[in-house]
Length: 219
Image (cartoon, rainbow, N blue to C red; front, side, top):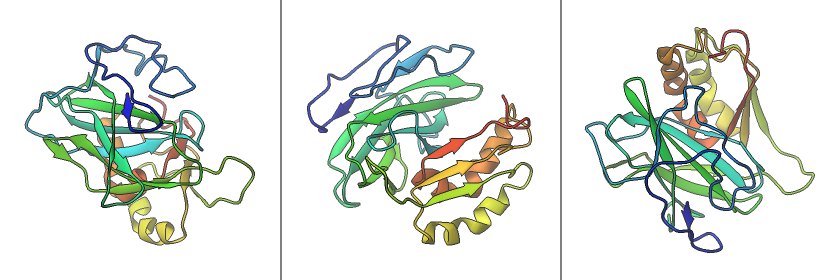
């Protein structure tokens, strides 16, 4: 649920029932995983490793008006919150998402809709017990327009390549990233995904990414 977009949404608590549609989103989330784990809305509980890890953005709906955030913490941290605004020093709006346990960690997910097209938003993720640094993303235009897209692929066993090019790539002003496939060598390996997100954290946190699933990346 989100606050301060065009209206206020009630704070959602307890267990998420799927299919679920987040505030102002025009699409339903069918499930977070084939395993159908118990999924819980944002709460106050905090564990020992509250700072978001593997923070990254995706585009599940209209790229001009929506974005989705994902990150991991320890199992006990239930805070799934994003603060955002149109300047880095004025994160005046708050949205809440949900989380579920995956292996030894808790995965957090938040869908933010009702945004303005062609607008740069600044944000941090986490909660009162631990937040990320401030990042930014830019929504897509609402009609035909030139955009800059970062296109990469086959990082597989060498995610460091992505990290080595990150600063130069961001300097070109892309507003989204496409991974053409085989992002990791083994899609079922959490260590592989940790290495990928850890290699280029700014890219992953600033550019919504669309991932093509190759034969190596399938889970």
